[in-house]
Image 1 (tube, rainbow, N blue to C red):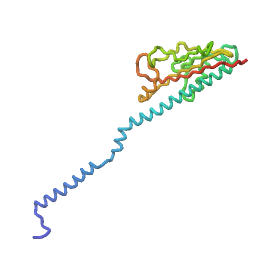
Image 2 (tube, helix red, strand yellow; image 1 turned 60 degrees about the vertical axis):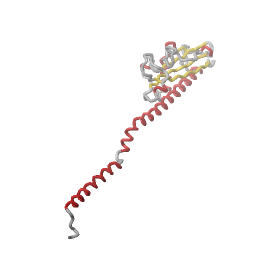
Image 3 (tube, helix red, strand yellow; image 1 turned 90 degrees about the vertical axis):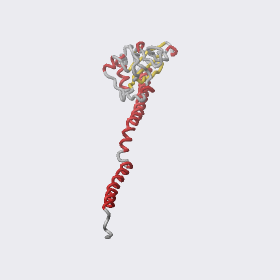
Image 4 (tube, one colour; image 1 turned 45 degrees about the horizontal axis):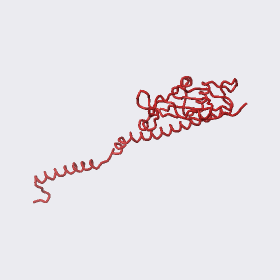
Length: 216
């Protein structure tokens, strides 16, 4: 019998084996293949990753805004203390409340913009400038609508009436900084809306007490 001759049944088995091996190798390659796995893993992790990044950035910006408001309060208080800003003394240095608010907004304009409406009708920035008989009479707490924790502020007692030479004055500013990232909102918001809705504001508070110089 010729060596090249094969039984028909064996030829059939060999054909099935040859066609079966590529299929099995294909399935093994598919099981081992990781093409696209990185894209899928990134899609799963992208949302929490970017939430953390945005939270870090927003927290940094909020605290920077707080430092900016503190600096503005100190600068405006120094202007009052030295007589470069006065009130109701019949001098060219006299400022109205609106002019004082505009000057304060100019100090923080690098990050916080005050609209014309905000200057005349405060909804975010509240400024309280008053004179007191002694330093002990200056209020040490932020006025709130209730005694509940994180209750909303009550600026109804705020005024603009600084004193003249040698008077004792308080300069206080409150600003509602809106927090956008839900991840950090429960942790850095310091006031809650009176209607019980979701908190969204980080309250920036800056206060300084001064005694004016005996300027002429």
